[in-house]
Image 1 (spheres, rainbow, N blue to C red):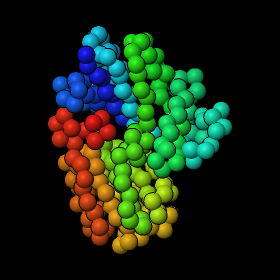
Image 2: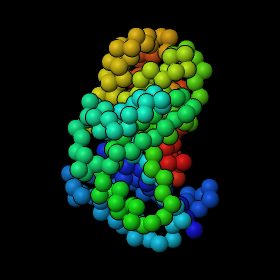
Image 3: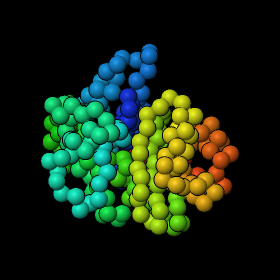
Image 4: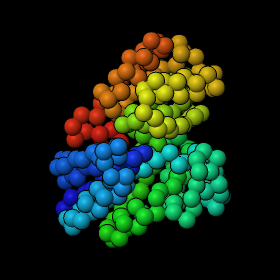
Length: 238
């Protein structure tokens, strides 16, 4: 029996179908001017048609989220907290919670209800998670100030750490790699992270975002690329 791993991004759906540690199939679908605007839903329907899955993993990188300490327990405020970052449609968005004990933080995030219902209708063991939590759980922090950047197709998420504690997480959809650079550098200025003292670590779609990386190297002293999304090897899905 196989495991289906789904990654939802802005206007995109990626998946791995695996058996054990072997990825049998992978696919990447993104809405463009040439595709149907409902491409993500159509491709989700296609992959859910099969009946030989034993479990499903769902990861959302959609930037409807809020970050709090893991001690925050007023879960009924989840939608309101998210609304400070992005518009929220409670009737059509399922409220989810993803906890990271390693760094003592948690993410409230929403996931489209029509996708949620389609996946749950399979009646299989299913784990939902937020990309930021899975990213965070994979990290090791050693230096005084660090930035960890996960690159997607037309999207970027990053963490800032000071003294091994999370001080900032953010997530941006953009078509321009220059926007990625501005977004991150502006964020650093707001939390007083100097480019000379900060260590940068990069993961994900590094080949697709080579311009961003080359431009970042012009401004920062310490930068390391850790993981590139080679075929059948995706940082978040793996």
